[in-house]
Image (cartoon, rainbow, N blue to C red; front, side, top):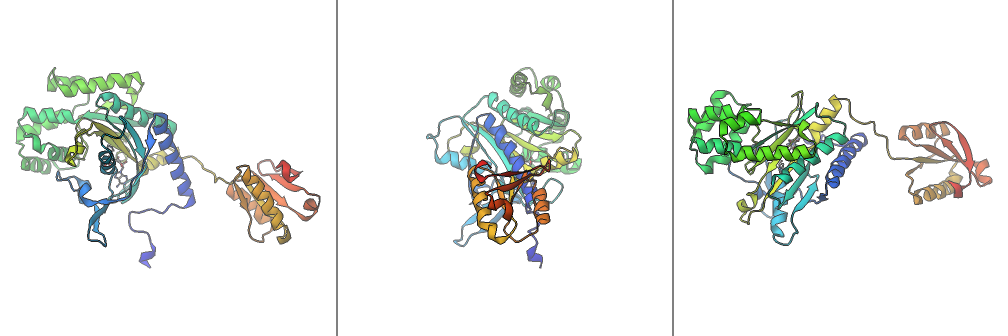
Length: 420
Ligand code: HAM
């Protein structure tokens, strides 16, 4: 019987849940489209090699990888970015730049189960390729904030913590850590908050960092404002200049209320190269709502010519938890507008005629297919959240009329089918 339960960490979407998911996706789509992004998609199954990176990321260890019947190593995608990179690379030079695309793929990761994290999730991805300036990063933040706005979340409830990989890069340069270790150091640093100090020191030690370097990293990553960062990194810091210009542009969009500089944001994926960000509920109860950043060198890791790129991924699970906690989940009715009901089987062809006419006008119609009592039909129409019950009754139909009951007011009228 256990086979009849869904696989652990996966979800069924019954209509109630599906309505909510569609509502969420409609806001994902609308926020992206308002900013000029176009939708794309890719297969959930990819070559495993697309994901086997060596920097020690959790996502690689969590891969649903297997051999297909042809002996090829394949994997269920854990994230969309490599598929997007593959698509861009396949048309390198032929796609007009910049590319501004979004997608809502299902992603698979064999994760430890916890609130807001499952083994599959849908992840809204919004990315810009071919735009090297910080303007593109700010455009993504604008998409994000417009989504939060749409679902009724205010800057007092969610904040976007922003930093840049260049901060850590400059710190590592200053303590003489070799460049090739950079991605691996980022992965460990991303976990600093979750690791015991000794464990963190041991892992960073393995990557060639000494105690002074580790202490410097910890100090800079603990900073929360750009002025102290500037004091720590020096006046000529590229990271500080980049972040200051990001803030100036965000000011133009009126977004700064949402943003906070947080030196500890480095992100746990190897490929980021510039500004990085994560959105969190301000109460700090949930895991990251979304995360993203600039990844200008991903294509060369696939053997292609690099193209600047920046984007974010935004899961469907944490945001729904957050909206639920805040009492912001909408009450969503079904889409049925009219219920058509024949009082006896002889009137069924007439009921089908009426239902057909209404549907031709674009109304969503549920035709009662079984022999039922009027009481049942009324209750059913109410359960569907319909606006009207259209009744085919012998006496009225003899006169060519349909009985129409407005379900909100209870008012009844008799109408010729042409006037429905
Ligand atoms: P990520 O931080 O691994 O980034 O995931 C982004 C978001 O996906 C998370 O903040 C969370 O909302 C959601 N998410 C991730 N794993 C799970 C899970 N197991 N269960 C539920 N939700 C989850 C990326 O994946 C990057 N590829 C994002 C990106 C796009 N960067 C640039 N473009």
